[in-house]
Structure formats: structure tokens, C-alpha cells
Length: 106
Image (cartoon, rainbow, N blue to C red; front, side):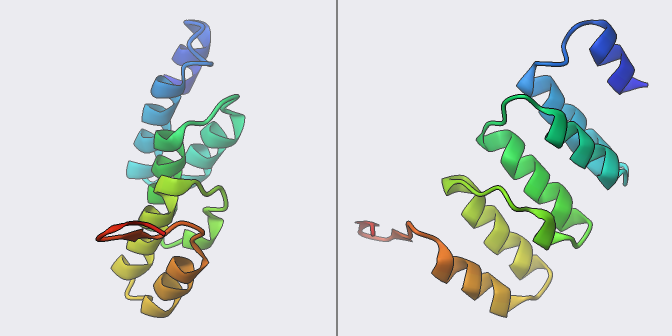
């Protein structure tokens, strides 16, 4: 219903609105619909990527979060930690090309 209204009102290319829709679908348990909205987004920003990672994490599907950018690494690590998967959290941290250290970037 919401999705069709967005298309009818010609807001289908609005990244902010689509990210909100993605988040809505994830929160009400429709991970497939959330993923469909994400895949159909013509442009994805950091917020949209993190919203999708959060959606996967909410449904214990962290492996589905394939798109990574600088902000997404922390979200992935948090997702693994919340599911008590310290091993994969550490692996993800070690794979991160840029690690934030207390005294600057590495």
C-alpha cells in the first residue's frame, strides 16, 4: 500500500523516502520487501546501506549485507556482536581497510 502510493506520487527516486520505506518493511517483519526496495533504489547513500544492514541484523541475516562502505563496517561489527558472534565481529574488523584508532586513522 505505502509502496504503491510512493510510485503513484512519483517519489520512487527519493532516496530518503525509499530508505524510510525499507526501514518500515524491516521493522514490521517484511525483510523480502525491504530488500526489494533496497535493490530497486537507483542510488544508495550511506544511510540506505546502513538501514539495509540493520534490517538484515534485525532478522539474523548479517551475511546478506554485502554492500560495504566506511560507515557500514561498524554496523556489521555491531550486528555480529548483538548476535553474540564475536568471532565474525573480529574477522569483519580485521577485514576493514580503514580502522579508527584513538589517535587517528590507520
